[in-house]
Image 1 (spheres, rainbow, N blue to C red):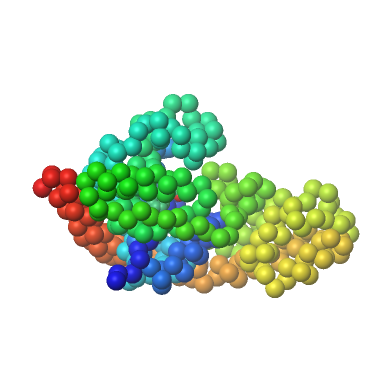
Image 2 (cartoon, rainbow, N blue to C red):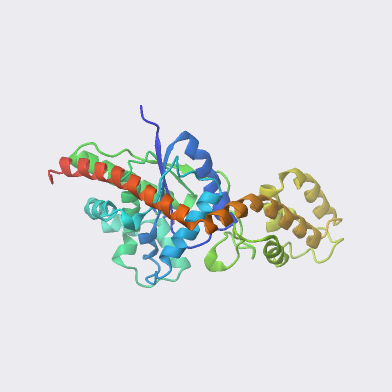
Length: 326
Ligand code: TRP
C-alpha cells in the first residue's frame, strides 16, 4: 500500500514569521516523515485579495527559503508553485461545475475575511477560492491536509467536491481529512489574536537578535503591571505565551515571578527575546546559506515542479478518462 499523502499549502506573502512556524511549519516538518508530502506555493490564490503581484516571484522564493531553513526536505517532498502546473486551473474549472454558488457564499472563512478586510464586492475568483484549493488538494490525491481551524471549511468543501465527482463519474479522488495543528496560533506583538504581516505585529524567522529585542521591547503586556514590583497576570500576557512555546523550562519560575511582582516586564521580555533568538539561530544560518546559493533554491523549485507535473498529469488523465473527455 502506498504511504498516505498530504498536500499542504501557503500563500506566498514573503518572509515568514514565528507564527507560521508554530501554526504550520513545525507540523509539516514532522509530517514529512510519516506521509508522502507535497508542498504548494499558492501564488494564484494571492490574486483573490491583491491584483498587484509584481513581487510574487521574490515572495515565493523568500517563503521557499524559510520552508527549507526550518527543515522541510525537498528530497522527501516536492515544493512547487501552483501557477506553473496548468492542471490546477483545468481541474478547478471542472470542479466549479460541481458546487453551487450558494454553498460557496455560506463559507464561514470567506465571511470572516470579507468582514476583516472590509471587502465590498467580492470577485468570482474570490468566491471560488475553495474550488481552486480543492483542485490543489485533489490533483495530488491528498488524503490529509494540515491546516489551522480557519481552513477546515475549505477542506470540507473539498470533500464535498470529491464526493460529487466520484458519484457522478466514478472513483478518482480520496475524501481528504484536515489534520489540525495542535498549537493554537501565536498572538501578535500588539496583543492581537494572531500574528500577521498585514497587522505589522510579527517576529520574522529571519530577524536577527537585535531586531527581535527591539520588537519585544514594544510588546504589549498586562496593563496593570506598570513597574517591577507590581503583580502581573501571565495568563493575559502575550510574552508569557511566547515563553510557553520557546522557553518551556522556565515557565513555572516566570509565572511565579510575574504574579509576585519580583520579575519585571523588561527583564522578562529580554529573556524571551534571547530564547527566541536561540531558536532562530540555526534557521537564520541555513537561510543565509540558501540566500548565498540561490541556484540551489531555484533547482529545488524546478525539480519540485517537474515532480508535481507528473502527478498532476496522471490525475488529469484519470479525470478525463472517467469523464469521457479522452
Ligand atoms: N488557503 C490556504 C491559506 O490561506 C492556502 C492554501 C491554498 C492551501 N491551497 C491550499 C492550504 C491547499 C492547504 C491546501 O492558508
